[in-house]
Image (cartoon, rainbow, N blue to C red; front, side, top):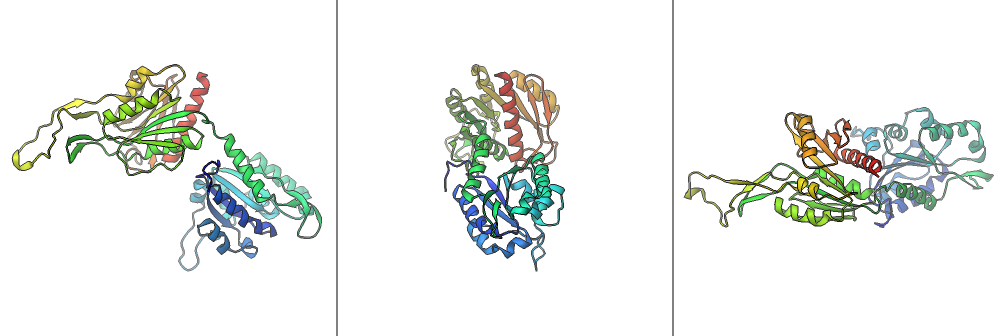
Length: 408
């Protein structure tokens, strides 16, 4: 497995349609897995006549999906979930029939319905006989797909299954993988950048076994770190106590516990950071005096805590920010959301703030989804619908990249 490949960690849906070139799909799947991609195969019913699902599931480590329902159990395979899971949607081989269905939206099999549901970049590698390839209807369908944003990996010339010679051979698996890597490399918009991300809660000790904290799980911050790394950035992730692990090899995790420890780690990374995204839920207060020994209930009927304000990490970095740096913060609000978020952005000298409200169902701590509104220092406001935190992370990085480009 190659962590240097742009395919590393990517989700690839490999659609196989019914043509003799399906035998190449086994090699293609193997190369994708070796490059570090996670591959889910979808086969049309006729594709199973050319290569077995057992072969493909063995190579990818995932059960092959072909039908809408699993026989006997009635388990439904969601084409919507498959489409949203994919980072790359590749159909190889793409027969004349499958190309026609994709171009005209004939959703009568799992492959085409998943294609119509995906938001991922789509590639097709046509494979068919010479005369079919040269037919005006095929050319028309390919033009339609291109106009829809689909990238065509051109068929090669050579001897075909009919023993005719001409254009129609599916591109070689290594060339297909190269085309995907070239595309993904061009998408690494943060290559050469250092991105600092803070994530998770902080714990402020009362005694050796108790603390003041909050319900943050770190999911949003970790999603932002993964998205930045996927775009080519070198990421420093300063993380409070969470049960998560960073996946991408370009993420350097610094584990901390308290707000003060997070401040020290964030300041150390900030000097060299091009972009800093403060998504941690830092405790606002800490005990004025932490006991060295466990406080015993039996020894005192009441326990009164005196609290002191913790350092404001975002404001500290905002005051130290130099030309060329971009600083984004988060605001989790329960009331007067918009006014509070804008005031916080201005007071802390942030270039952008991401606001979410606990009044929105599915947003906030502990969920896999979030609903955010992003405010930029220039007055721009962007509202987004409820999405997975991975999708929200992409919206955040897209907005930051646009803001940075305008400042340049």
